[in-house]
Image (tube, rainbow, N blue to C red):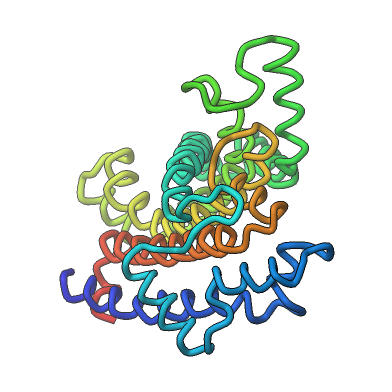
Length: 306
């Protein structure tokens, strides 16, 4: 397992390097002068030159890239133009809120999809299976920019059960987590149902039952473990999608997370902050893919020797 982990880590490092390079290239791929875009049409030439010098855009490209990579290694992503604070400091302040929302949404999704998917697989083509399909399709079809306001109107305004917006405790996390986790719950329910249904028809499960294992123990020890392998892959990839998909949810519920900060930075044309936020999300994706591969290999040891 150690050699496999080191090999996967070695494969992830070039991806991190490529992602960092692409994020650096964003400012140079933008049509027109990015400094003039940040300051607007009414900016004075002296202001343009001052900002260009502040961002280091007056230096040669190679020198800019070297300075950017050195700063990245040191954890220095520049300084926010609007907040006049280090970008790294701002990201670290807002990133925990996004992680908290994404984890809560994932718990909602898993709490719904695992029991519903397992029961649907055990009751194939029966009423429970058809009901789970209906709710899965419904969950995937409802966009969070519609579901969020509906939940606010019903549970926050009319019933006064939860806060309308903000991050003021566990109660304020409920509605955003449900909004963000509903679509993933629908997807994972179908994935768990399909994967487990396939495993229940395998010959090894019949052999395990013939050797004296009860149906419940055979299900948990063999079928469910094998069925979770593709589910773990989807969970790992979708968790990264939750971080980016949280932008809309954070905006609806005024959640002080990374997505809302990036939207604010785009509106304010705060390029260093936008660049740092995009880089952080991209690196999170890479890290989640690495963790998913390691969990995948733990569930199915054959993967380590391929």
